[in-house]
Image (cartoon, rainbow, N blue to C red; front, side, top):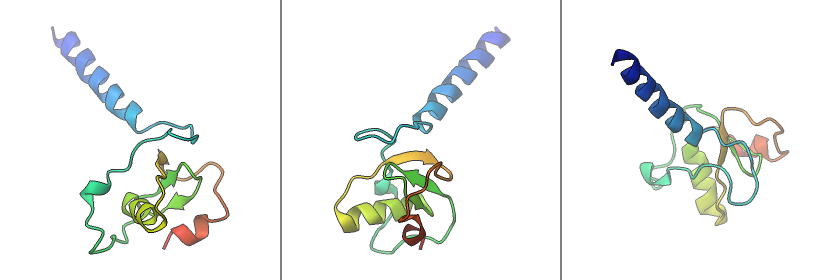
Amino acid sequence: MKATGVFLLLSVALCCYQGNAEMDGGGGKGTEAACGNFDQRKGCTKIFDPVCGTDDVLYSNECLLCFQNLQRNTNVRIKNRGMCQKPSPRSGSAQS
């Protein structure tokens, strides 16, 4: 019984983790950013929690990715959390 509970918890954790681990950056791929969690009118925090967008641009945090989508009227999604494998030349400007 105890082993079944542990297996069930590990299965749930694995399912949650897979949702954030999509690596393909093609159109429609990646994880949708949770832009509703941020008040864009107040701006984004300076907390460095990098996300790599499906445009291969490194954003300092998810809020900044949402802000850039709003400003540019785009739908860049989260390719992966953390650094980009092949950063775009634009990455330097998206980290502000």
